[in-house]
Image (cartoon, rainbow, N blue to C red; front, top):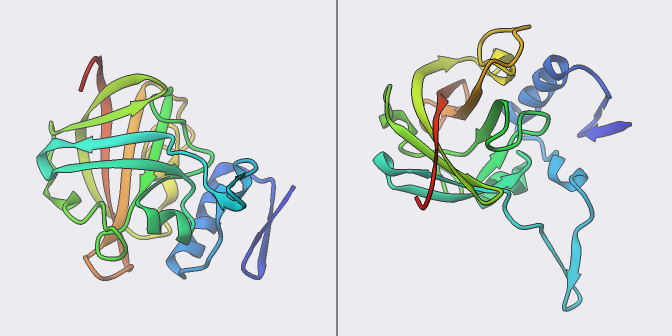
Length: 192
């Protein structure tokens, strides 16, 4: 399978290489849209419509309650929070990676820098409510792709839990670095 990214082509390759290429494309503001590969879009009333969100992310400390869309292309992030393809599905074993803007479009992650260790991150997916707790906050360069690993920042490690990594540009209004908030599942919840 070949995916077209602007003028680059990426064949089916390992996550690390794919992630590095995709992060580079995002940093260059390319218009690659991985969600277009998630499956066929429906037609309703003669117009094309996007699939429904795959989850909802709530972060009480910063007043966030946003749907999560599959994909991290320009059109996906203009809608809000996007799920990075080839990372764990929301609530599943491994690392669920979500991206969002801080200053453009709906800017769902504009207050992400206010989070600290222990803050709750609530995710609703597949009829389940899950609570993660922030375990670390990092500032990285766009080329540091180890955040996408099944265990964030531990290349080659086998999944040993359920993680949630939130990524946005840093500092606000710039794309020279990334702010990363890593959470670890604390417990399943009912009725958030």
